[in-house]
Structures are given as structure tokens and as C-alpha cells.
Image (cartoon, rainbow, N blue to C red; front, top):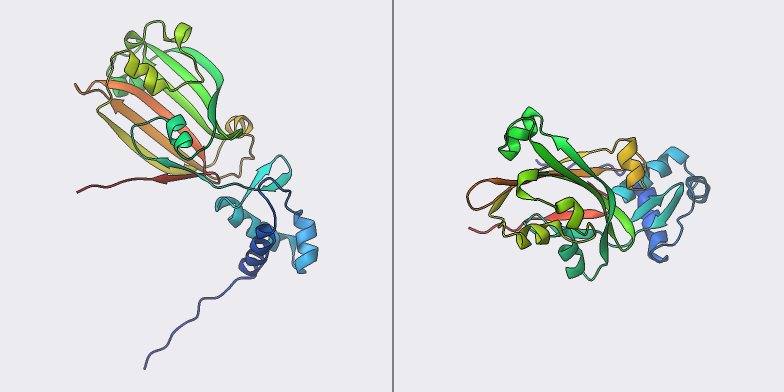
Length: 237
């Protein structure tokens, strides 16, 4: 004798399906009705609507701009590979640029010195930028580079362009990168720079890149909006 247990459908999942039907009749950028309006329309508690909207936010069907909820466009698909964010966006026919948050000159602490194969106290250049696609803030990128390899970088580099292209133009070749990726939530500063609230799910990507001689090129910390980004990886035997 066999038995099957039907999965339980929760009330917020039913509401989510009905909201998705509503979204299908709207265009990207249109305003989504408020929690209160949706609760009245579907005769449910606002908390039920809030749960449904939360799932739709993570799925990338909607996005929040301040207190307004909008119909979202498709997520940007970013390959987990040595390449430029700008190139990946343009491959999909999207516009991409970067907004400068700031340049910093740092003295390497023991942990960073170990990662970049330099001595503690050695000078490090830090570049922090907001990444945008189609005018939407999608990522916050912080790159730290051993200063001895990049003389004059702060004075000559156009921060709106690809840093990887700049590094290659200096005769430094990328051979490999070690990536780690996890989920997180933004702190108040990060949320403000990305124009989201602190409940927005994020991907945190940490990368250490190397040249063919095994010498570290950069240490990068990138925070990407989980509601607007998808990562892909290609495996070969």
C-alpha cells in the first residue's frame, strides 16, 4: 500500500499567484498596488500580502524604489568568469555604467597583506564604485590593488570604464581567480548606495585574482542585488 501526501498550499502562495496574474497585465516600470490595496482586493491580511510580495521581490518580478513597488524588468545574468561587468551587460543588450563612490589609499593590514602577497603596511589602492544597468543600481564593487603594480592609476583611470581592461592595458594578464559567493543583507550605508532597503537580499562575491606567475592582481568584494541579478557558471570536463 502506498500513500502520497499532497503539498500544502499556503495562503500567501495563492495570493502570490494572483499578484503574478496582475503583474502580467502591467508593463515594466508600472506601479504595483500597495499592500493595503492588495489586501482589500484579495480579502486577506496585509501580512499575507507582504509575504507574497517578498517572494516576488526575491524572484525579481518586482522591485522597490523608496516606498514605491514597481514591475521589474528581467534580471541581469552575470557569468562567474574572469570578465567585465560592462561586457556582460552589453552582451544582453543592456546599458551599463559605474558611479564613483571614492578612491582611497590604505596601508595593508596583516590579512590583506597576506591576500595580496605584500608586507603589512604596504600601500594599497582602493576603488569603490556603484554598478548600474539600465539606470538601476545593481551592485557595489570594492577593489583593492597593491599600489606598486599600478603607478598613477588614481590620476589616469576613467572610473566609468572596465578596470580589467585597464589592468590588461598595463601588460598584466589574468590567469585565474578564486571566487567565493554567499548570501547576505546590506548594511545601512550599502543599502543607501544601492537605493534599496536593508531587507533586500544580496549576493556577496569575494574574488582574488592572479597573474600567470601566481602573483595576486586584486582583491575584490562585490555586493549584488539578489532581486536583480542571476549568476551562471559553465563547467567543462
